[in-house]
Length: 253
Ligand code: G
Ligand code: G
Ligand code: NA
Ligand code: MN
Image (cartoon, rainbow, N blue to C red):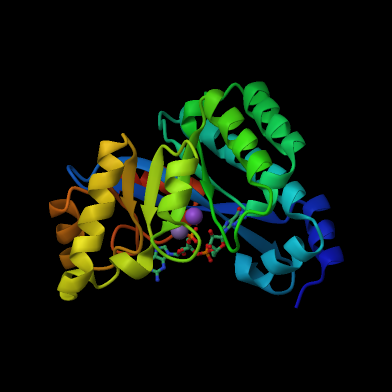
């Protein structure tokens, strides 16, 4: 298992890259955005997923430097797509640990401004593994990001700490229905009132809904019928390298 020192070393040697998973419209199937998912191209072990190194990075207080690197990589990819005629919003995962340091938000805003990328092209997904410790600071950071024009998504909604309370507290623009609620929902009628309820509440708040974990046409059809806006999941596409995305869009129509 990699240690914290290895993560720092990998940062210095630019061994991280981003894979992207498309988000498409449930209305017409069009490509609407992509979630950036970090990967470590390890010289010996090959491509490592976040589960192999994020916990160590978090424990060693390296989350913020990793976030800065993810944003740097995403901006490079966004501009490359843009030059090739693809204008595509990118979603970036933010650890709740990153909501404790106001300086990080400044750094992110500056990086995006310097790259000349419009803030509305970037959405930050807030993932919560535990209750946010300092609510006042977290709220200040999220409001600052939102005021600058970034999108804010509440990730993994309906499971764990991503609750109605969080949805009402923070200025979210997007709600991502947790894959544990979505996956198999077409075969589980008792799940459907809760999904319908969450989608209706979001719509009333002007918040875009995204169904995660769409793996079957039946689940996709159900979420479409329930009024969900966007779909993400293996049925649509697996995460792929940035360079593969323009081609994927052409092929998928
Ligand atoms: O890509 P994969 O499905 O293996 O991702 C596993 C987990 O890691 C997901 O919960 C995802 O949100 C998280 N993750 C992926 N990329 C990033 C990142 O850049 N930053 C943070 N904080 N989490 C990420
Ligand atoms: O925690 P977060 O929502 O960021 O999770 C992103 C992770 O979910 C990525 O690691 C991605 O590979 C995974 N993922 C994406 N689509 C699907 C899917 O349809 N089914 C399952 N089981 N996992 C998925
Ligand atoms: Na996410
Ligand atoms: Mn999620």
